[in-house]
Length: 278
Image 1 (cartoon, rainbow, N blue to C red):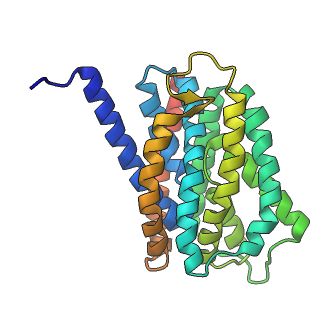
Image 2 (image 1 turned 120 degrees about the horizontal axis):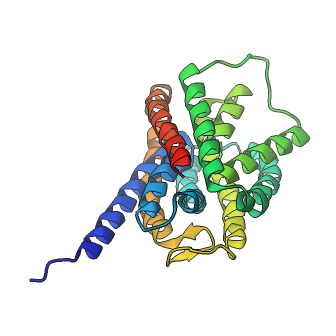
């Protein structure tokens, strides 16, 4: 029996790591409506770096690949949330036009010209801020309501743009925003999962287009998206996203968010380190 070469062992380990990452992020996407990008980007940055890609480019590819996986994760998780009647489709319709515009501005324009080191720091800042907000769990004023349609479109623009820069599904902004407007937390999580689809599609198109002229991309990359990682994570995450969505309606999400916030702080520190290293 021929033993596997070191190269083959490396690929087996990478494939197993990607499948595990997909299982975990799919569950988190369904549970917290975050798309999983906050967890995926740091780990994908490390795994893509192991393929000989420079740190700055690895950050960009991790962000783009993470966003592309959310196309599949969001479809899987929102189906389970919709069966529970928890998705606020009126909010989805109000936010989506702004989301698409903001996402395209980020992925087609800003993403291609901003350095990967800068994006690493931006990601670390957003994730660190989101984790602190989860820890605070500040309650909104009872009288606060959702804004008018133009206000929702504007909020969608901010969500789509920020998501495009950091490769997350937007839940780190949309869930706190909806909770701030007194949308019930389970509805906010479910609606955020639905918003992940237009966010991911618009940004993924932009990442493919803007990455066409980039040099030194590894084999299997289409634009900034690393297809081997996308396929592995998408398959695994679609299996666990419905389980996370079911758990969101049965588990104490507030307590789970505090545990998740601790993880996010660690990931924010790691991405800041990658920015410094690059």
